[in-house]
View 1 (spheres, rainbow, N blue to C red):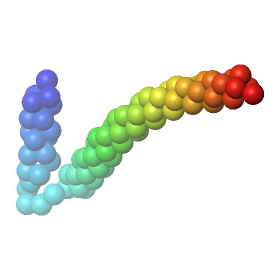
View 2: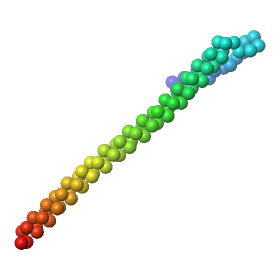
View 3: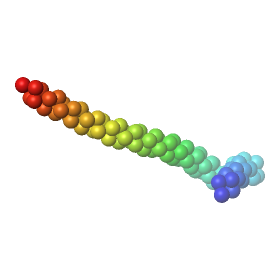
View 4: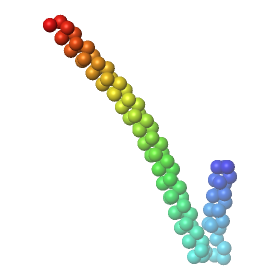
Length: 91
């Protein structure tokens, strides 16, 4: 499907750039402007998708590390409690 869309885009560009009687008409210029706007929007959308994927990846990394940090915090707290109990038992 992507190849078909790509070839249709090329075909529509060829149609727009084909001049009729001598030079481009105002409709040709308008259509060319619309094509440039559409290309710019498409490029921005692909950049946006890449940024969103990168954001999601970093968010997943953050959540995983936050979980590990919480687990390690619990281990440290447990060890501190064990040391305190050992100190009290040794008195």
